[in-house]
Length: 336
Image 1 (cartoon, helix red, strand yellow):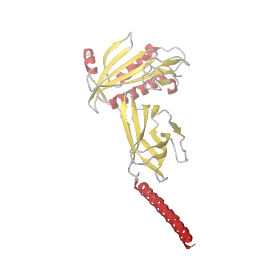
Image 2 (tube, helix red, strand yellow):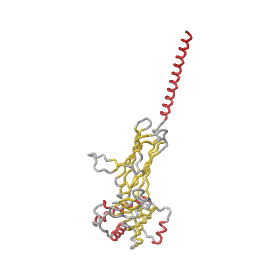
Image 3 (cartoon, rainbow, N blue to C red):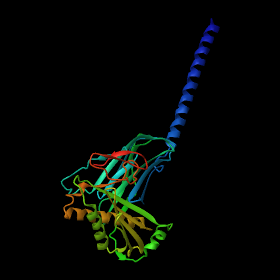
Image 4 (cartoon, rainbow, N blue to C red):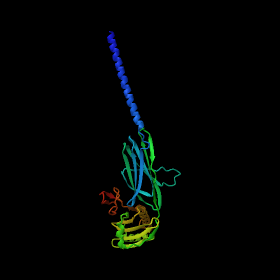
């Protein structure tokens, strides 16, 4: 009887010991897991980078949020703020939405626009990149582009980080006429450092337009800006003018042309910022001329002919309600 009682007590004791051992093991595992979690420091390992560069006749702004930590972040909300003298042409990815402005009694004028995009999560060691493409609408302007990112970190806290502001400054140009023989234009265009920018514009008016008269206005604008006449092809409606920007000591070739119901400005120089500034300036002055002469009523009738999908210049300006196909990506689109 005593032996049975002893065996029973021993069995209970063994079970108790096994239970205690198991409990200690789980506690140690939990402690180790907690330790690992505490060692994940995301404070300086979630980085928000930005970049602004001229590309063609527009600006490209890139914002990248990089998760260099050992754990994912979730509920990522990115906002990008830019000045209103920039028109957002397209974005990658294309799922941006405009944030309605908060207007208070103290606000005299809303001078910026915000867009946002959200991601469910960004796993450890991965990143998300957003690219925005802008057409400047006004010359002699300056402003900043900023990016803000909010996310939930590994400890379930909301964190907010900001990027450094990127400045855009479209300076007024100061052109001096520069003579260059027309025979040297081809050599100028072949220089390795040369960058070309183009602004293609369509006039949204159902009545028939006098494109020869409009072509002559291009010459008026270039002469008013102190450029030197180089050559002209009346049949193809192309003009070439040349000058030097005194602020940057940069030679610049300007080509104006009318074709396929489009008005096009092309600027060629070593300075892409100068190219964009001049394109914007010429476009503004063309708009002023067209309004003053009664050809259009407002800038709402002018359309920048960039493909909505890839940004390539569209081959023609179609009639109202008709579509045009991009020669680069093949996307069919209606302009007006």
